[in-house]
Image (cartoon, rainbow, N blue to C red; front, side, top):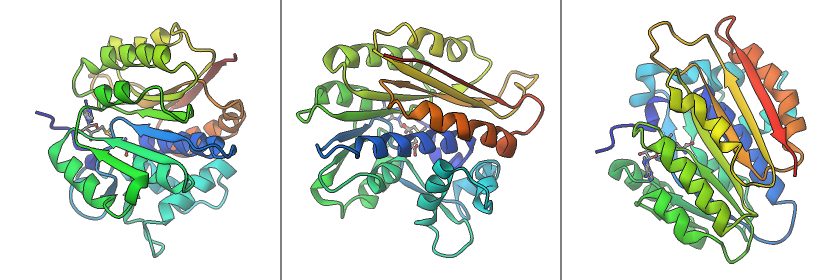
Length: 281
Ligand SMILES: C[S@@+](CC[C@H](N)C(=O)[O-])C[C@H]1O[C@@H](n2cnc3c(N)ncnc32)[C@H](O)[C@@H]1O
C-alpha cells in the first residue's frame, strides 16, 4: 500500500526545481511544429491546496514557492514558472499549487498529448477529476507508470518528453528508475527523459546520478539544488536533483543563470549549493 501523498510536500524546493525544468523542456519541444507526447509516469493528484488539508501540516511550500512568490527580481525562467503558479491563485495570496500535469498541459499546444499515470487510488481519482474536461488531449491511467511507459515507447510522433518522478518511498524505485530508463533508451533513444531524485544520506540516492551517467544516452544534463547541510541524524531530504537524458542544448545556460539565484533565495544554511554538469552529444 502506498502511503506517500504529494500534498504534504507540494511547492517545496524540490517541486520548484522539478517544475522549473519541466516548463523549460516542454517549451523547447514546442518550438517545432510537429506534435509531441508528454508522459508523466508518477503524476500525483494534479493540484494541491496550500491553505487547507495536508500541505498546512508541514508547510514545506513556505521554503519553496513561498520564497519566490513576492520577488520582483526573478530570472526569466523562474518568472515564467511563478507566473504559471499564479494561474491557480486568483488573488495575490498563494493558496494553491499545481502539480507536474498542469505545468505540462499549460506549456503544451493543442496538437500535443499528455499521458498521466498515478497508482495511489485517492490521488488517481483526484487526478481524473482535475482533468475530466481535457478531452482527448489528456489521458489519465490509474496504473503503474513504469509499465505504462514501456508500453508507450516509441511514440508514433517520435517526439516525447518523459518525466519520472517517484516518491522513492519504495526503495526498489532506485533500481526501477535505472532499469526503466535503460530500457526506454533502447526502445526510443531520441526521447527526452527527466528523472527527479532526492538528496538523502542513503547510499543508493547518492549513487544514482553516477549510475545514470553511464547509460548509453547521446547527451545528459545533471542539476541538483542542495538547500542545507545533511541532517546529523541522517533523516530528511537536504536537496534534490534532476537528471535529464537528451536535454535541449539551451538548458545548461538557463540553469547557469537560475541556480545561483535559487541557492541564494532557497538556501537554509551554509551547506546550500548547486551542481550543474552536462555531457554534450
Ligand atoms: C513525487 S509524487 C509525484 C508528484 C508529481 N509528479 C508532481 O510533480 O506534481 C509521486 C507519485 O507517484 C505515485 N506512485 C508511486 N508509485 C507509482 C507507480 N509505480 N506508478 C505510478 N504512480 C506511482 C505516488 O502515489 C505519488 O503520487
